[in-house]
Length: 150
Image: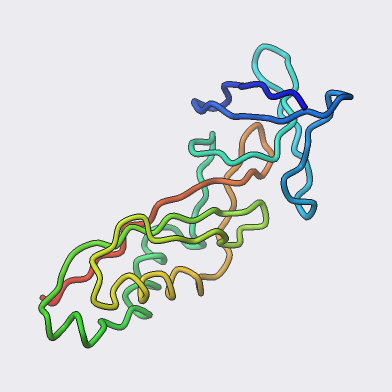
């Protein structure tokens, strides 16, 4: 199996190829996307992007995202009692179909806030996926969730 790196949309991507120079899919449920680069080369990838031409968007935009978070976050009692405030950073992947996947807490504040932020993000409706070269691609996203008692 060969591997090569390609710069695409400002990111470096690792692609695995089999003996016939065909991309090796990590997950058989994902289709391979072909992207034509500015230099004319075609890039086949099922990789994860961090920056793309058109970033994923929550339906209705940031205002709707903030509304969803404020309506669905329940401040944990343990955090209230301990007067814990701060931001929980949640990493997740927005798939080609807009679904949230591979969620994890990148930086937490504890006292039940991490679990609550993860619960709410996990239950989000599908996003409008990010695109590169006009094709929907998988994008890694980090969302800060603020917990404030005031």
